[in-house]
Amino acid sequence: MDGFFRILRACFHASPDVVKAFLLSMRRRFSRVRQGAFASKSNTRAFNAMMRHGTEHNAGPSAMLAALEDDRLPDVDISAVTHNSQKWLSAFGDTLKALDYPKKKLHICFVDNGSTDETRQRLAETIAGLSEAGIEARLIEQTNVGFGGGHNTGVKAGGSDFVLITNVDLTFEPSSLRRIVSHAVVDTPAAAAWEMRQKPYEHPKVYEPLTGTTNWNSHACVLLRRAAFEKVGGYSRVLFMYGEDVELSYRLRTHGFVLRYNPHAVVYHHTYEKAGEVKPVQYIGSTFANLYIRLRYGRLTDILLVGPLAAGLLVRRPRFVGARRQHACSIAKLLLKAPEALSNNISNRTDAEFPFALLNYDVTRRGAFCEAGSLPAQPPKVSIITRSYQGRESLLRQAMMSVANQTYPNIQHIITEDRGETLASAVLDFASRVTHEIVHVTGNKLGRSDAANLALSQAKGEYCIFLDDDDQFYCDHVETLVAATLATEGARGAYSLAFDLPSKRVSDLGADFDVELPISHHFMASPLDPQAMKIRNCFPIQAVLFERTLYDERGGFDEDLDMLEDWALWQKYTHRTQFVYVPKTTSFYRTPFYPAAQISRMKALNSTYNIVRNRMDVWRASWDEKTTQQ
Image 1: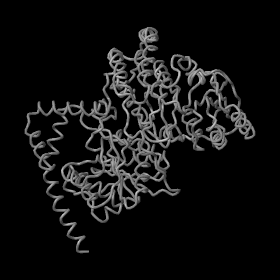
Image 2: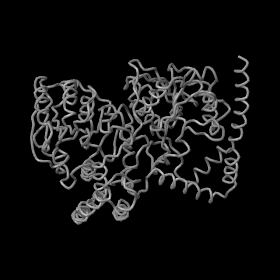
Image 3: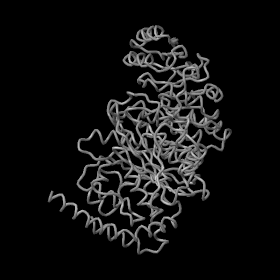
Image 4: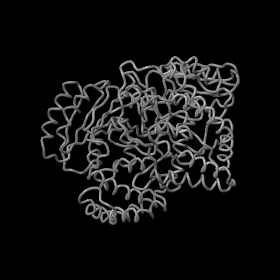
């Protein structure tokens, strides 16, 4: 393995730059195909538009952190549709009563879509219990008109400015409704929808980590602005089950509205009995919806793929017994709906871009069935270290916002400056707007590695993470890594997957980027392999949580290294220790946008490669000898 890798490296670096550029371009293309992101240019444009929302909000905490007092909270209508849902209603009613929200401001409409079990009896009991708790509740009975049709009825029955669309097969964290409504109240008027985070399995959607902006919402539990919902005409009557949320999301964006995701507002969705479960109704409904929505909102490339995708459903191995027959019925229905969908596409053309990725929609993060772990009542402190310098204030504010938006409650953020004290005022200004500790340190001004070691020496956390000033965490990054570490006896840290985000700054001083679609590298997606770590860096710097005591035992960065210093550090910290692999994308790091810039960077890194390899071979031998003698 080592010898083969050496040969590949040597061949690559001996190649002309034009060959390197071609190989790097093909690598990016292959990586995206492998992760299912076969996509049109609309995906890239939609992703860019979504990510630019972060540049508009970098002065202080984002709206997703708001938690308003009772007198500022508005009335909320809640629409809950049932169909043979008897087993969920007792827990659902209990969790509504436990919400940390003024009960007199809640108005719940249950819409029963023709249940044939004991759902209506259980609903009567649930409504009685809610009424006793001071919550207004009512029931509307009708024939089964599907998910969207049921919620159209429920929304129409109310009159509040905000309406919560929710499944009944879920339970709420007590703070969830206060958090999501507070977010909506302080958000821009252009925002129309705010999606709650689902546990134990978070929906693997991509979103902009600073504002929560996303290209579409899941409507298992989502808050909607009534005026926006009514303006676009509510849920589609074409889609009976599944896909209604994506279609409504795209229709809202057609009218210029913005969609949000808030990982701080949590519900527990009991939709899967086991990881990776295939549910026939969901699968058939979702695939039909994807093809229909392509016709309704896609560009030409997206529409032209409808035929091959439909044919693929018929010829490939079925996911369950009877799948081909059901797909054939769906395709026949699609043919009947296609003229209207295409007509609407042409007549309602908009500047908004709508992503499609084969039978999915947007790029997805890995980890759809990575179960969220639990934290102790008093979680350990985590010190996050960011290195920065003069001229990168805009980038630094975004990094600080990324930390401020973490769902993890016990954080110290250390900003370490290696070229002076110019960032102090920006750090102090941001620190005054947040509740967690932010510290600015500056020391010997000897470079990046020295600055990082200074921060490590002053870190108060039991665990540490690095975050470069141009990279960002998704909101659950720290929570996910700490939970994984604590759940594994003997673990001294954890690492998760990260997006490689090819980026170029629009201006030298700003924090606005043009980006390509993110890449999930296959070589990072595996448990720690000590031999692989010796020949290549398997961890992006921000992807790793480690015990602070490792710094005391094994030292910090080698201060003469200005490149690959993190690779050397990870070799020290992972040598004969246990680090937990979390197969979920929880952060992103930026790499050069253009192949020429990427080649230049790789040449610089290659000049340090053998130095680090040889040095770490010596370090390991010395460490093993020392520990053997103890």
